[in-house]
Image (cartoon, rainbow, N blue to C red):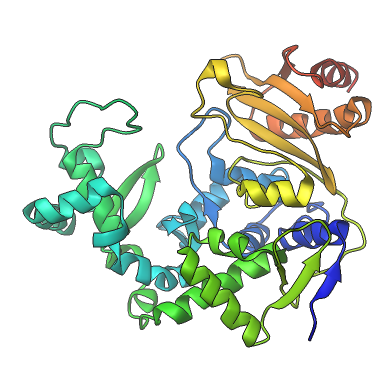
Length: 407
């Protein structure tokens, strides 16, 4: 069968619908069922420690559902004594992520490669200090769940360019986490509490036979293909950070099996692949602020290809070199990314601070500003902040400030 043709607009609508933006937000109270559907649609929630606005894993759910109780997601992702039990667990998927329990065994091939493919410091501790790993295992078995501070060893001085200066005990914990021997039982103030994996996961998941690497990776590509709707092979491989050679092979196998349909998309230089059951809406009416770690925009090449939107996370860029700001969220309106805002929760003052606001070249500030003002007001309310304050930085800032005044 020859590749089908898609316009750029049709591909964009398919991608938006696949990510959960093809339907209205719930009109009534948001329940666990709504949250479960959103997370399962995306396949995972990426975690990040930056808390200038809100922990990143909460934001993609808000983008799709609007105001929802964060404690429901917390209960779905940790051991509880109540009726609602954990349904998602942490592991390295697309970076550190919350994943459905059923996905955990699909990543055992990554766990098995910890000695060769984990970060250099982890490999070094495992290779040079096996007695430390044994001691940390014993400590967890006897006293878990434990914090990294419970295995604290005097840390070395931080080297230039080094992002973290973890002590050796923390590195050992992280190696065991990568290797799948321990998991995150819960987080307290975003700090992991590590425990043996058999005490973190249900027995049905622990006892599940380990799938062959090829079978597991094919299923991960299926998850990515459903979540993206239409994508290139690098898009699909990046979703779960598959090695590029493996990604190419798995995509080719799914095409051969008829599970992925090759497509040509206008303006795309690389071949596209369509999930056969992907929805093809005629229009999408979305409005959302997107976390830097939202699957819709986390892969820079894909965001550029789908939306003509050049997006760079500037968290680790020196302040003097930042173009748009520290924690910048793209603004989705309809089927287009029309602007971006640098946001901060000023909890002491009780306001959502818009530190800069920018319109995209083809967007009209007077049309974007009222919609953005409404979304910011809803976000502020969800974060228990009393209002929104706009600085004068950015070409969208004057219109946005006026819209908030009149709103």
